[in-house]
Image 1 (tube, rainbow, N blue to C red):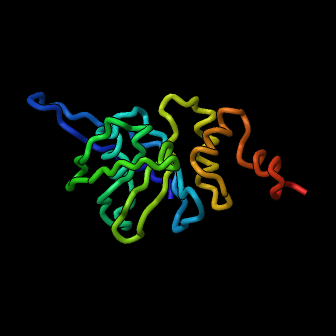
Image 2: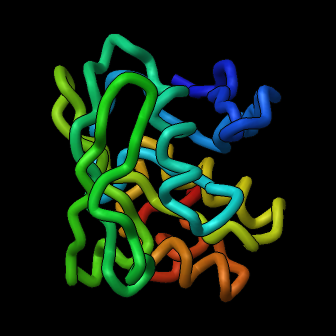
Length: 170
């Protein structure tokens, strides 16, 4: 599923005007959990308390209620312990795992959990588009840190697989 739905709406206190957060930049592969990453998310800023409700609000309600997310302390040392989402509270768990440095684990009601590559907000659009596609590819064998390292070096997942002796065009 490519989850792009209506943006979340919020009202500033005492102002009466509503504000719509832009739809999340997200790539989800339907009904597939396929490796170290399930999909990718490209937030617009590092403020989890602003970005997470929009992410949650854009996901298909059929997956169930998102109750918890796990984030890396290295990437988000000031992450809040809870985030308010439309109609419920999401627990934010901090992890020291190196794999969580550039990923977020989303625990859902009926489908279990998704491991999403978190693309840095300031990543150039061209690079982010490649990362969104690579992370959602069911054949992707690479972790979040490895995909980001490849992007920084200018390689993509197929180039890396070929240079490491994996399958490539024959």
